[in-house]
Image 1 (cartoon, rainbow, N blue to C red):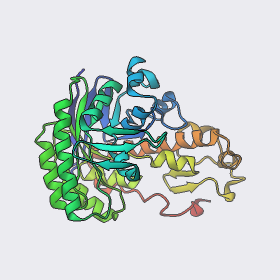
Image 2: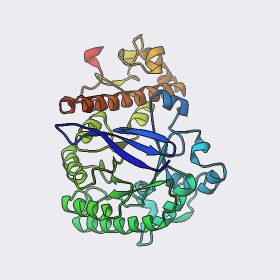
Image 3: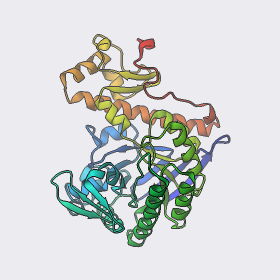
Image 4: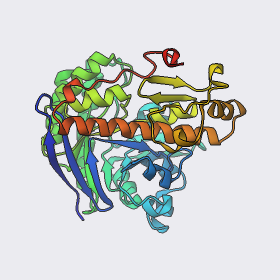
Length: 374
């Protein structure tokens, strides 16, 4: 089944909408949060556990899978879905964020990103065409065009040059893309400059791709600046195509950015926080590794229906963390991902009922540890 996107409902007071993305591996309801499975694995949890948490789509990374185990091997073994035992949709990042985060190991040219492997020091050239080739071999439902993520702060001249390079790379990615069963998304860049964001959006939209992403956010800028630019940039993107905000994702971010017109999110926050003993609840963040929970028989969140909350106490989860037992990160991750999908369902319901404007969530940790609920 080819890729398509349909808007199902709109919120009367904001730019939020619900929709349905159709892919060869099934539908995805939007707004949606995608779990990050960088190396063909969402850390510590199985695909069956992801499905139990109501995850509909996961993200994997082109750069990491190219280096290890290699896209040719994955293709020979039946493609990424079969390789990682995930039958639902997959989105693959292009490796552009690694071009940014591993800046000490790479050199940018017009041709692409020449980088040194963080695994063995070997040198590789990642071009827009190569990034497409790798993602086609992996068999992702949604592939991302190679881009450069602008650091913050950055000069206007640097941001403009980077934005223009990203546009030229997107044109080359489209020319190289051959799989009709795979959608190609372009990425809007431009740093923290509104006029560059607008120009980037207009240039990328001209390519008439299946979807568009907002890249280069949550790199050190203030929340106010981030929200202002996301809202402005989203307004330049077509209403009949999905809008994907890359790497941004506190629960409060999800609510606010859906109001600004964003449909898709990914972030390592729920899984990374889980591994460090930080758990999300409807009442704020709970730091389960703290000594105060050593005798606490309650679940993480009494209102949560996840597997962890139905079977395990705060005391046991704290014990697992202190004892460095691998079951601890698994149970914590299940809870946090389940909570994130609870937030997504709250957003979808609020849109359907026309009351999203009144839905708010505090920032994680805004109330500190849950002293008022102790």
